[in-house]
Image 1 (spheres, rainbow, N blue to C red):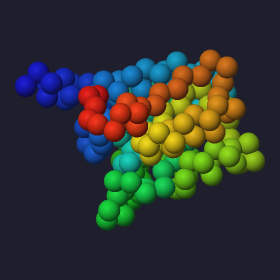
Image 2: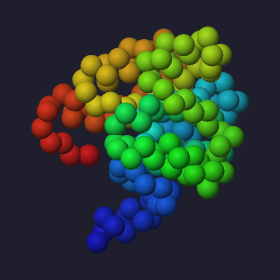
Image 3: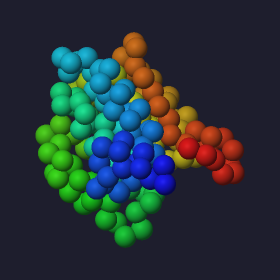
Image 4: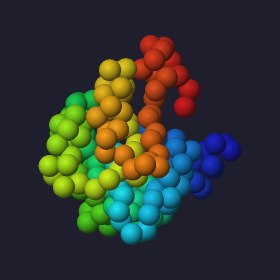
Length: 167
């Protein structure tokens, strides 16, 4: 009961389906608040699912701009997640603050500079959970990060231990 109450109290977007804990949502919102107000750095999220962590990060940070990427190759057997993401961003009035790329993160990150995208001040990797993908998620993003960027990798232990994990 206490955990249900905490989730309801601390989840900034209970109407958005997702797998992130309320603790992670609050952490990402706090991280978003630490980025410069002048917009010189962006929030980057790889692996959006239906947008829960993306929406939660942006809701409490009205000046924050985000770049998000997902190719929906996991957790989308019916092919409905991109439409759900678009609905969730629209419902929360965030469309104009998110630049979304429906592609593999390696393609986005390797062409980052050519696209004229900003320096990354906060990076949340929640893409493919295998060890090689997580490592590439860091390697490809490293040259794009601000000097004092914050990087969060979800489910790192899942990739390292092939067993169960606790969030």
